[in-house]
Amino acid sequence: MLPLVETDEERDAVVPDETVMRPGAEDLCARLGLAGAPLTRFPDGSQPVYAVGDEHVLKLFPKAAAADGIAEGRVLAHLQGRLPVPTPQVHDFGAYENGWRYVLMSRLHGENLAHTWARVPRSHQERLVTEIGETLAELHSLGPDPLADVLGPGDWGAFVDRRSAGAVAQQRARGLPAAWLEQIPDFLASVALPRAPHRSLLHTEVMRQHFLVDPDGRHLTGLFDFEPAMIGDRAYDFVGVGLFVTRGDPHLLARLAGAYGRVFEPAELLAYTLLHVYSDLPWYMRELGTPAEETLPSLAQAWFGTA
Image (cartoon, rainbow, N blue to C red; front, side, top):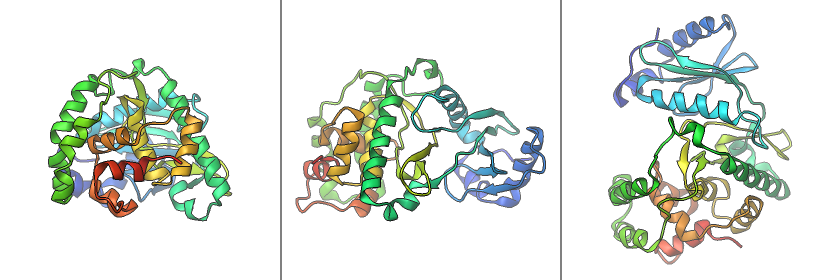
């Protein structure tokens, strides 16, 4: 029911088109024993995701992203019941047609933290970042070896080298001004990132958008979206923390780090920001602003410093 999708161009044409996607999702639900269940597509996310009734979620991955579908299914199964915050329970995952893969999982309930943050009292925000810190500590303590066959990058030092070699070109493509671009090589050379860190299971996109909270905004009720998970240095997960959870607030970052049990150097976290697979420094600058002194060390302190 779903066409073969092997390129970005094909994905851009097929995935947003509900006249194509919905019949395929309905057919797959019927095969999974959920025929007739109402489908509601979620508006966000890089992959098509549907609520199937009130209790299930169906996430689809085209052939071009098949490895992500395998990774998400495996990671969620590995995490089941092992974190302080609920994660989706996997009911089934596997292959569909024309290279598509799927994960059928339980539906988490709650409101998206990104949508509720502005109306959550400061005391609740502090409690929530404490829970995020505790959750990350538990995630990073889990042995990742059972997932080594589906999660990269394998050789962390080689990953750092590859990302460092392409860092300037990536930020130039994003539109970063020359005055910032020319600082990147020396800045990265000045930060001693570990080449063989303790191997941790990483979410890699720790953002308010990937947490759910109860209606009062007091407690987390879910953590989701593990398709980009990796195995590597735990500091890499704090890129998303600083940019998208605490957003340059040193007091909140200090509180989260205290709950986590470790404070990372601002320069280390900015280095990983530049090396992150999805790094987009101009976007982060628009979101968080820049310090008066337009240097990368000052930027590191502004975004990742703690009180």
